[in-house]
Length: 198
Image (tube, rainbow, N blue to C red):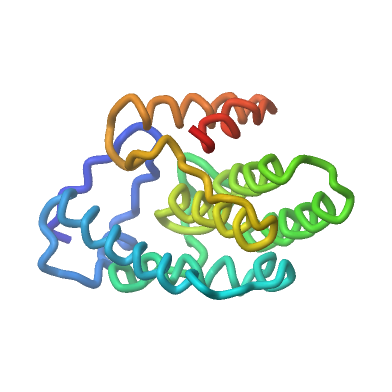
């Protein structure tokens, strides 16, 4: 692939094989790649608008993978497919499906038994989903959009603001986001919930 993929702190590098699956061969810079991916993500957000989904539909493997495909499928051939390599984060790639099923069942339990507040359920789901790291790339963006789907479609509350800035670019907002994720790594969700609403 001709594009230079410089990775920021917190990003998972693609393998050479994954990088070769770029569909838009004219992309030559990270900025161009980010722009194409953002346009694709906006199409996925449009697809979600005005559609009602049941909790059963949202908490299914099919929905998880379809949303990722819709977010990045115009740009990457592997969009919506489980990764086939291990990354700097995430479960072993052979355990993705098992871990995802456990997360889906846990989340249904949290909702049914009011284990956490609505915001905390959505953020816990987001955190565990990104910790599984189902896909070669786009896991952070996908998990944030899934949290928005949960909070809007299931709980009928406002979507999260996520610091109101792009989290793919270096800067204070991304640093605060990564710090909140690291805090969640140590079982404290409060910073990540607060950041999601900032």
